[in-house]
Length: 448
Ligand code: NDP
Image 1 (cartoon, helix red, strand yellow):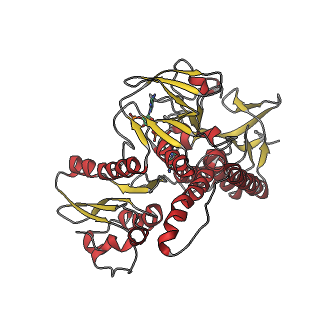
Image 2 (tube, rainbow, N blue to C red; image 1 turned 90 degrees about the vertical axis):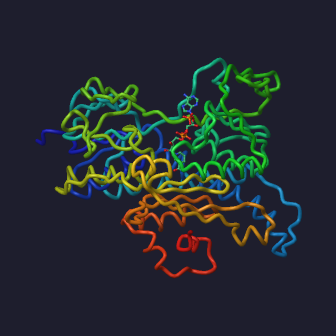
Image 3 (cartoon, rainbow, N blue to C red; image 1 turned 90 degrees about the horizontal axis):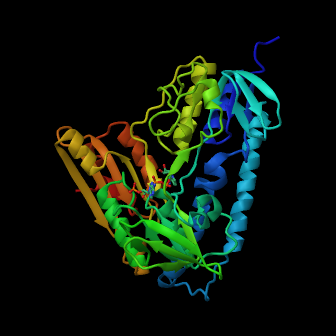
């Protein structure tokens, strides 16, 4: 009789958990995974993927408007939220099925229920069954943080945004980070009146200041309102269902929807971490070492529950590295250096490496190159929206230490350019490459 029921029991079938389970199984481990909601996790079910579909849908608003200058006469266009929502949700169902198939094809047993640690190697399932595993992986992700104040329960988060019955005409979005700016663009393009409220006067902290300034300027020009240095006092739900929102420094205002996009917190509650002796770090996330191991030798954690970098591809890498290390006899660590990221705002922005101020603080002597241009399509369309590429180099060597863009397709361009930055290429290397004309991306090799 084997000592344990499974070699690996994974709690949470999101990006990190699915990758780890599948790869561990491919390495020959007997694996089970518990998921209380849907296989796929935040990214696939209620995050990156359906969000990107909404971003595509939203962009048609500008494309249809711009089409006139390109010779197209388009009869009065209308937008049907329910049709888009249902197409998106249907595709989420399809992906949920694909992720489930992936696990099943690798003979990973799936328990569609909540799992709790009840001992170092014991896991109790909601159905009452208790199983044992030699290794346990916690990959339970994170959930939206909602600030507590009177009436906060009347607001929604991005989780609910994908299921709205109707498009709200007036939306107040709390927070000025990734989700706030992405949904501000989405709702605005669909025709909603959008206001962003944030406790500080900065949006997208962590991104280069030039990009943030540009996004703010473009967003304001488009008609998105910003209420900075302001916090909620209360939300009152009125008889007609509208929300009367009281905030500091502003008169009460009516909205049809308040959406919180104020960060995400690790899902650690009710997991039985104490029973297994797993420790948290000072931010309330599971503490892990560089191989994703917790303080308990056979318990690991990957993804947002560890709050290292809250990005899907990072969770996937952590899951892969864990499985290769523990079951593949190939000790692997994840490099957190030069992780490219993007915000799918309208227009999108993307960055890799250090911002200008980070580089100045860290390296002292740097050179900054910029290209501030109006994309050809915007010129023809009569759209007065400029793009910005910015390159930060170490002064002495010319090595590129940061690259930042706000422009159409910035994320697509960034993925390719990030390879060069990660590889340590210099400005001269970029300049030695012949421009591919006419593109926006050619600005990468023409920067001054
Ligand atoms: P972010 O961390 O990006 O932004 C949070 C915002 O909420 C900030 O403006 C912050 O203000 C504010 N805030 C934080 N805590 C509070 C609080 N207690 N009360 C009031 N305001 C608060 O979080 P998001 O929720 O937008 O996204 C969560 C994470 O998900 C992101 O960090 C990102 O890693 C990931 N994500 C990635 C996407 C992508 O890759 N495109 C898309 C969506 C999410 P301040 O600046 O003052 O701190």
